[in-house]
Image 1 (cartoon, rainbow, N blue to C red):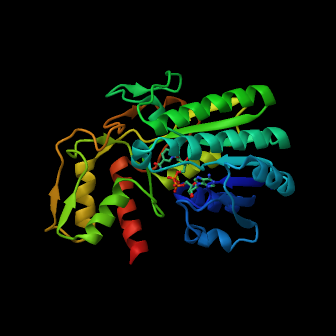
Image 2 (cartoon, helix red, strand yellow):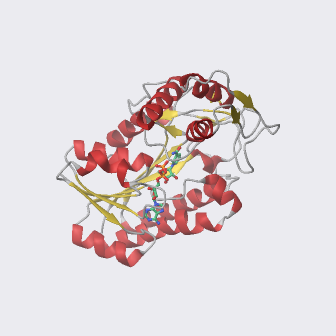
Image 3 (cartoon, helix red, strand yellow):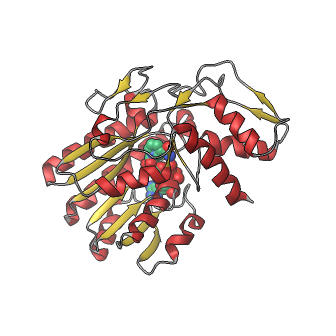
Length: 314
Ligand SMILES: NC(=O)c1ccc[n+]([C@@H]2O[C@H](COP(=O)([O-])OP(=O)(O)OC[C@H]3O[C@@H](n4cnc5c(N)ncnc54)[C@H](O)[C@@H]3O)[C@@H](O)[C@H]2O)c1
């Protein structure tokens, strides 16, 4: 049994990770400032005696250091970041304070306390716009959003802290994770928009944006399988080989909500907002070589998620 800290654990992915770590027998300390996460995401986790929650801003290195020392933390899972990319497109400062500062603060606290194991939730956004070309782990980062830039800077910082302090870090670059407890993204937006106005769905962009969507259960399986295997810093693309278009997702949401009469109004732009990457593909050779593979295609993940999110709302 390990003492693990999940930073950002009340969020969408973090709360599923807490459940999975508890299921494998870890003692889980979930820290979150609840800026986007909610305690209701942790309903299952709270039923476990091995779980505790503290409302803490992990950008505060001193508080974090004291906490890590007291709790005798062995492993840090770092998922605390801004996840509203459109918000930071309007105000880049958000990425500095929420995404980059949290990483620096976590690494400083780990260094001072002597914690040697890290998992980091990175993103495909660090690759920027590559069109139909498959992005590989060794490609140079070329982010076009402030979010992608803050994650690429975080990865560079992790690399230095790993080298200087003998920390082992497992870094996953993923994108468009979907499933129950979603806090943002296209499915979340479409369901909320159609709930507010069942007659019309206004889509950002022309609907042709096409990306791979991975179900959170597939992602969590990959984290649990690989998080303990890194020596130094290991980076993996994590995703599915297939993709779904925004127009397909709009149709599925409308159909599953029983609103076939609703009008879908598309914009004229190829992108939803400046900094959005309308198409991208991952090279998944490295993660597939570990034996992990997503169980669902992108379209299957989309339909399953729409059903799961609607079931939770009823
Ligand atoms: N969801 C995706 O498609 C996706 C894709 C690539 C990478 N990621 C990364 O995965 C991680 C989790 O994403 P998510 O989709 O679950 O988002 P989320 O917003 O649901 O979760 C992030 C959590 O971090 C918390 N948080 C933010 N700043 C904090 C701070 N200073 N102190 C303490 N807690 C803080 C938020 O309250 C939230 O609960 C993030 O780092 C995100 O960048 C997500």
